[in-house]
Amino acid sequence: MALNTPIGLTPESFNNMITGAGAGYTSLALTAGMSAEEVSTAIQTALESGECLGATRGGFSFDFSYETRDIEADGKTFPFKGSTTLTVMNASVATTLLEVTPGVLSRVFSNSELNEDKNHMRFRMQFTEDSYIPEMWFIMALIGGGYVGIKMQNVLNIEGSSPTTTPDGEMELPGNFRAHQASLTDSQYGPAEVFWFYPAPDEP
Image (cartoon, rainbow, N blue to C red):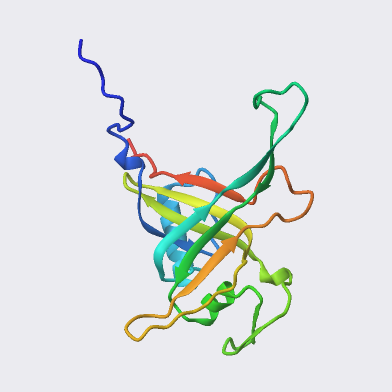
């Protein structure tokens, strides 16, 4: 009898892979169970209303890392189930933005303040309630159709930015956007969620 080669690749593998850089949005009314077609409409609406993060370079780099602590006790020789506790969870995304508009810069610089006409920006010396972006969505396309969406809440760009110009290229605005819990009591789940949106089934 021929032996099977131990590989993880299946006929569906390619359909489950993400293609392209994806895009970020500051307002999308998405919920679990929505179809990919409904998400596509929401994306277009956000793009037309200026709720897209804009052009990026290098895509998005997500960090959902966490720190753990092992409980030490006499007689413990190995880690046991329940002896490792979660102490800190990070939910952030790094990207490089290219458009230099009041909307983009106000998101890159979380301590910024725009005037009413949106043609003058100042920088505050502290974060305020309106420094936080209530929601940010990052939408990526699946090769087989549909989207994967990552939702982050109460987002700040925690590093500011060091814009760079070049004689033969475009200014780059790097940013590292981190999600935050709404309050000290909101600690059961982290401030980030992942959604899958699939195409609606064909009508019989």
